[in-house]
Length: 231
Image 1 (tube, rainbow, N blue to C red):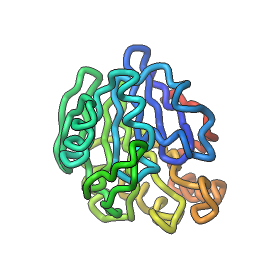
Image 2 (cartoon, rainbow, N blue to C red; image 1 turned 180 degrees about the horizontal axis):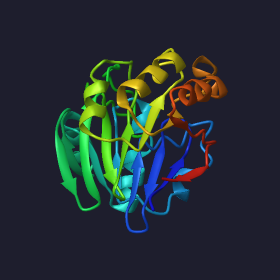
Image 3 (cartoon, rainbow, N blue to C red; image 1 turned 90 degrees about the vertical axis):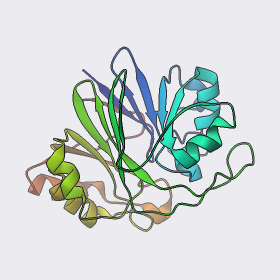
Image 4 (tube, rainbow, N blue to C red; image 1 turned 120 degrees about the horizontal axis):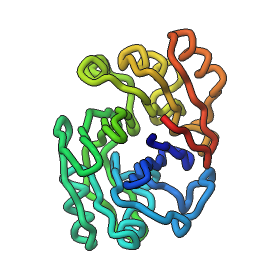
């Protein structure tokens, strides 16, 4: 059974006993992170939604240490390849079958500029995306940083989603009202909120959000940083 561990902000780890995936591994500099980058013991693949520092995070250091394959957009992949990383480039709407399962890049509506990384370099402008990941025979949707958009209906209609990781912090992404509407569009079985409470400007009431999701007849799992969930 696959296990999802939440490291705070948008950082997620997926494990199935064979393969370990990291999504947006922002640990160093993340005030909510329960572990430091050096405490990550395995990272076969790292999936990055966009080049902002709170999502690209510790990708370079972790990928070098664990010889990870980094999955990212063409622009980010080209940039990371020049840093010596093994990459797999994709673009919005594209899908690829990996040894662990299928990954599809989905749309996300957010900023596309880069922040200074750990080497003092600035990634090129890059398209923000989300991910549909088939892992352990279950479908997980990580929305990345995004606004609510109506094409989420198409994502849910085409792929049955077992777990949707949705930002709820508002200000930079969806807030709890729009994230609840996103769950209606997606038709997912369960929601795990992400991208909230890292800083005061994105504080969110998880109880209020959970109530809205349960009113839809869906499940909501609130994970504290360091908590894990078998899905």
